[in-house]
Length: 356
Image 1 (cartoon, rainbow, N blue to C red):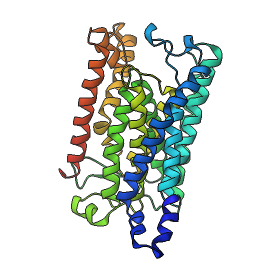
Image 2: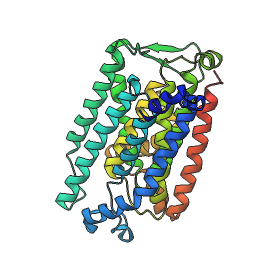
Image 3: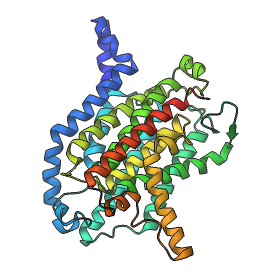
Image 4: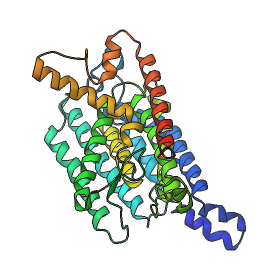
């Protein structure tokens, strides 16, 4: 909580007063995580190259065999340092985000490490990973529902509609668990091309950071006719730190990638944006802002369902980004086009706040 230490010096000079503003701390959190990732990223890449066996690193293309994985360690490291420095750790939402990030990063690291030790693309058994995701999802849901200091709204709000509200009560615990599991696995499926997943996460983090700011301000919330969430403004700072970490990782992960995030990063990032959606009461709008992730996951569902029922495949290969790759579209072009679509989805989600 570096900002509180700096704010303490306000008694000596009024200029330190700026550290109490969410906007200032959001910018500082973004720059801090970005700086840490870029400056120290090359050292992490060097260390991971020594750790990872070349034949274990990537199974898609021979040209990428020597690219190290477990890059999620870069993201979680810079993210936590920035969050610890610039956020109010007494805020329950910040505590939940940190808990979720560490839990899923550890689960993903375990999976990546097992792959490394076995010299195989097979890591943890799927059931073990699902149980780990269910566990943290259930814990988060329980805390949101029972924590007296949060007084969390367990209703679901539909995009575009003002008066359609679905109260879930205690069932929200199961719903929150489902959201976290779904988003975590969706990002994991999307992580198949250089820079695709991390840039998509970046767009979602920017969107939810902006939404967190307005939902945490009673005047903005009333004007937009969206639920006011006390304490949500602090989540903006966390989202800023996530944006910085994502930008820094993209510096090394853009085509051609120098490092892959692995399950260490994808499971964690997916869970974080899922929890961000829950906190700002935009659970259903994730289908829009996270449209890239939804497309990737849904393409797998369609492919499996079609093959089991008709014995035929709809796509050449899933997730769907591989379908376009096999169509002969260069990987770099597929990535950039998905980025463009992701930006459109993010902008459209912000519009839904006003169109109600």
